Length: 227
Image 1 (tube, rainbow, N blue to C red):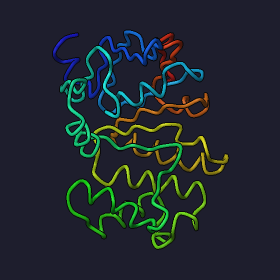
Image 2 (cartoon, rainbow, N blue to C red; image 1 turned 135 degrees about the vertical axis):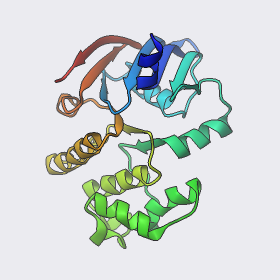
Image 3 (cartoon, one colour; image 1 turned 60 degrees about the vertical axis):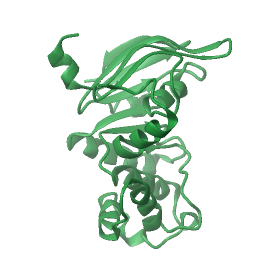
């Protein structure tokens, strides 16, 4: 790969493998994601999707290979350094919302600010407004619908201006109406220039992305453009 192509990539996996004892969750996976690209990762259960997400999201270190995030190999970094990268460069959106039950929507967004630098209530409110939840800022998670909770998660993921948005089954717990709202938000973020990697079981969700890769038995079996 030439220097210009490398500069255009925000993320590269180079011959990445992950072993859990005798289980080979990923096997020599190589993948490049361009800045501003929307990539979908699909595959059956046990194909390695979650493992790939954990490696890309700096939650796990691979057994072998390189993981380049903005040109920096994060594969061998110590846990403390990986925590800083997750905090500063990656916005994580989960299927399980992981909101703090006794904090309001606004406070849940501000928690991410707290771990990054300093809290800014006006900025956090702006993030909620961006996902259409300004009027729900004072509500606790139990007072929000599933779709609203996921939108709080998106606001929380965006508050520190991540270089990479990583979403794990972001519509997996949502009904059709709320899935459409969340996908519309992701489309808008992509149009604004965000780099997005979505792990999904849903062909409909994957079709929203520019490109899809399909994992089977820890390897990339297919890679194709959606449009």
